[in-house]
Length: 307
Length: 210
Image 1 (cartoon, rainbow over the protein chains, first blue to last red):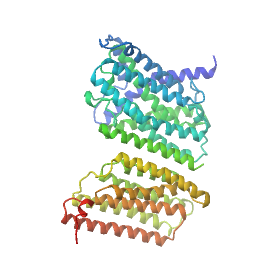
Image 2: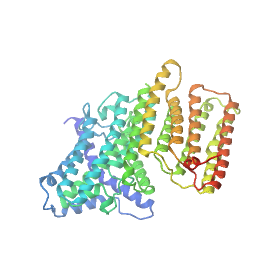
Image 3: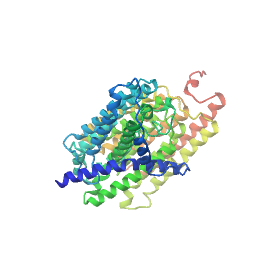
Image 4: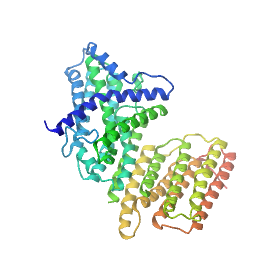
């Protein structure tokens, strides 16, 4: 087998295995910062194992969409994970224009989740689906302005090529790192339903966005949804860490070090942000997302006018 | 380096456009003052001179410590309500800022083809001027108007540093003194207004007759 493909498979497996660990790390840090002991770091794994043992019960009003949606969700997330590079290894899927695939494969996952939430017929879940759709609408431009500007900078449209071609002598890249990290962080917070947008710990249906959509799922279905949400968080974390990959053009080892320290730093940042902020009012969230879009537009402006 | 700092300056402008809290305006003023001071100090890393370092330190003292502390004192003394009162929706305000910033970047790019200037500091300064004016236009509280004026002034500072690399130092220090006195006078005026009217909104001043 080609060594490149092997590396791709290994990095995909790394992402799939480490994803719950990252979520556990964030939760642990959040607990420590708020003065609690908190669940062990491996708690997400335990929860997944617990879920996989349980029986799956579907609502009587649900159709086949509720049954296929969790699988489609996880599959799309795994495909998206296969596009992202870990360290300096070539990812499994890499071709010109894969940033578009990346955005819309996540869009597909979200679409099916929304559909499944409406399929069950509970009014709460319909509400959650409506919110998810609204905020996803505002989140999309953030991704395209940010990643689009970085792809303009490098001249490539594949995530792997982008970070391989960027020369650190290019001064505007330093500016890019500062701005892109802020806007991608806001994007990650939105897409993964973390604190300022949505409280992952709340169990009041009226205030939830993501959690309310999976209220009626159980057993394997819930396992698939939970696991894909962990993967989603980790994917966005890697997307943010990849801005720092060009610093490691010399060696693989440096790339791996950047990957590990980046994940730790990001989990710490997420923990701090979730500790010091409270959830925004629903009507203020579009404004928050527009703010992130504004940062993305600023990014594009800088690129356009400093060439 | 100048570019990074100017972009951070732009980010602070976005933040000003979305925040609801009066205190955040003061924090942003501090932040911008710090950025300007660092911006002025950069040339002295390479060739140090005691005389040249006076201006950055004066700037640091006035913009980061004196003025924000004074504004905070006014807010505390006069018990200003902690929420700003915009006349238009925050969302539209942000959109307005984005559109203006795009136009400004376009215009400064055109200008830079004729005359030599750094596009990003120039455009950031220009944007700060416009955003300062917007803040004065679309906010009701008088204390926010003072902050808007100071943001405008910061913009002029950045703008001038992009156009002419060095103003005579005495002029810069003179400008700083001016700004400080203006803020001081505004504070006194606010005090006087507060003894006549409840609250500190421009709408009250519309009822004044001679």
